[in-house]
Length: 367
Image 1 (cartoon, rainbow, N blue to C red):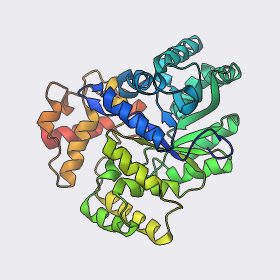
Image 2 (cartoon, rainbow, N blue to C red):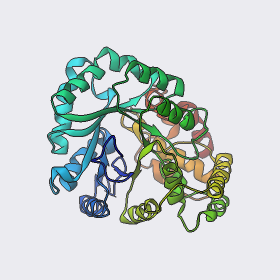
Image 3 (cartoon, rainbow, N blue to C red):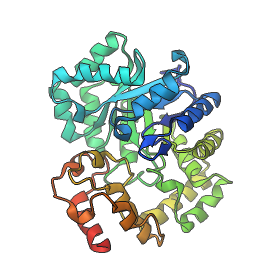
């Protein structure tokens, strides 16, 4: 990442929370081909976490990347997720399992995952900040940072408490730029204040910005042939403190589109930026539920409710699209009306959605 992290090539990274799938399993053949193409294009940054794709992302990386390419040819980021440790003694064994799952002896970057005010005490009480620094001193981590989902005020507090953190991963895209819950702009400015480079996650907001309604597409036409996804990536690349932009790519077509967009030099021009912001206004007016389909809410749901898919049904109807269909999405799985109101989903939701009330609304709409 520029002079601070010279081993990182370019500003585009392969986010491995969304990979090509064959049913419930990662399509390893397609993922391997995409990995090769990504490296051939001159990029080398890969990002994963223990819980991604129901704990299948790390092992897919071992099968398709680390067992097939020299260690010096790629940069690998993993994360310490708070829901996988209860006490200090759990952290090192979890870390060793992650190394083994990925098939490496060290991580280039290791991030304290999904940091927020509600989780800060847990990380602090378990000495997570100290332990990752110990692992860094032992040569098992090269750089330490955090991924973050909360307000700018909370971010400022944590970076003040922990100046040793080297990088911050933020949700950052043009739809969330001034959103009062996500606070992309304000959090970015806090990182600038503390001289912390930013890694962007959700630049296309879980794919929503790749398939906007026609009115938004019309505004984006001013960007000279960029696809909607490409426009979203170039928006992020226009901010000087953004050093890495992650994209979760489920097909070679998505990758080629992203590579084409990131090959364009320089930031968006003033007219192009205004076109993106007009598209944002169109999307904001039509957005029903701002779910990014990260699926953090699904794994812990006691009723196996496919929450992101249900919310996609709501959004499809709001935009006059057919979508997957509620009956098909819920076949063999929980319906919205079966929510037991345990609240586990809301505790972990990066978008701070009131999921229980939204499921009530979804049930009224479709059932």
